[in-house]
Length: 199
Image (cartoon, rainbow, N blue to C red):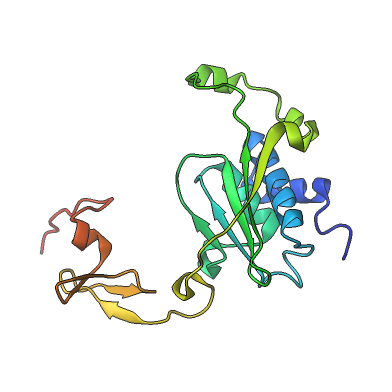
């Protein structure tokens, strides 16, 4: 193993360059990634081990950029899945061994609501790079049920939604009494609203 593959300073610089600045999320996400990768036995995530990892990130914030930069995992390569739960957490899976761990930031505030003003005054970002890992993170071994349609590689099959006519990959369709529907049509719920366009 090249000692620099998971060197904190190098990984922080790469994450900072990818993200565009250095913030708490970059510090935490980089350290979380190194901890998670080591726990599942991944030494060289961008080299010899690059096909052996999947990461499940639980936020769409800075932390996820740090995870991407440190692990080399990408949504487009199907090695990173993003669930926007708004949590500072991620699960790291070694596809070769099946070993998986979930790492999350410890809650030191109990059930107290934290305001934007308090967040702006939170500890210096550098503090997150120096804090002992056991003070900052919880890490637990987990199991992740990975289905063939969730793994990297070409789509297993492609079908057409009978309502909107759009194509659906990787068994994401819904069968409603023999009608094949995409999830937005099946649930009649979209993140966008159609606007009639002039002819």
